[in-house]
Length: 274
Ligand code: APR
Image (cartoon, rainbow, N blue to C red; front, side, top):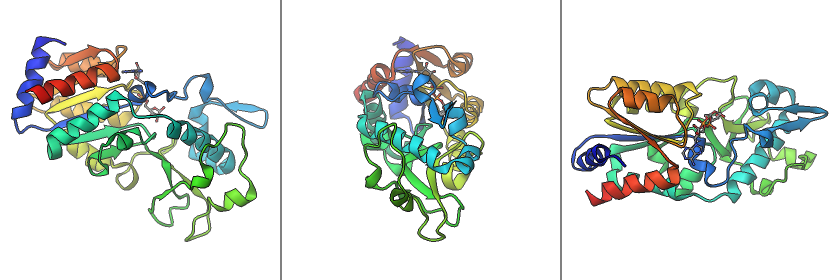
């Protein structure tokens, strides 16, 4: 790691400045969770194969709710079988070190950050969480865990009528839906912490962006808000080049090429040694 980055990280520890970590699918890739963008993400309904961008939509849920649930229940079981990796654990270690100076913004719905020890209070799941569900009619904002009856859901299993009753809202009798942001929906505060996330970005002095390609707009807004803050620094951690790396370097920050599982523990070790 560059000496100038090492010095910056060490100096940060004794400052009273604030740090935000922004993560994407890349941090969970080493836990074996596919981004579902490749062939493994395709889902067949009848004779049609659909891409995640088509499945993860309110439009598809209204058309074929149980088929969308089948896809999420399968993905939920893949996430449940995965384990947090050193990258997730390093992020939780940074939160323990910095306390309220720290915030985590994650696009991942796999729950691995919380299982690694990151706290719900300082973790903003801006795309939701695949282990939670809520009323599709929005009769309330209550989030409830997806029942254990759906654990280990195999790829080709269909929901029975009895099991479908477990996906009914206890208040209005309508369907429950996965608590996940769909491609044809927008960020908001109650479910996806939009306002809270942007407020945190405006107070951030050090932004560590880890394992994201920058394809979604709230993460880009976070990086842009930080880039406007006087003397704030962006550090991008990625195996490939991406828009955050270019912004970081343009702003006098750093683009570190490497895996989350390798680089984030190195950054935590530097913080701890300061
Ligand atoms: N370490 C660091 N970076 C990695 C690693 C790794 N081990 N593996 C992959 N990457 C990088 C890739 O180079 C890429 O830039 O992580 C990024 C993953 O990009 P995407 O798959 O596009 O994931 P993400 O940026 O989180 O996608 C955003 O789009 O699919 C929707 O809502 C979904 O939350 C998702 C959002």
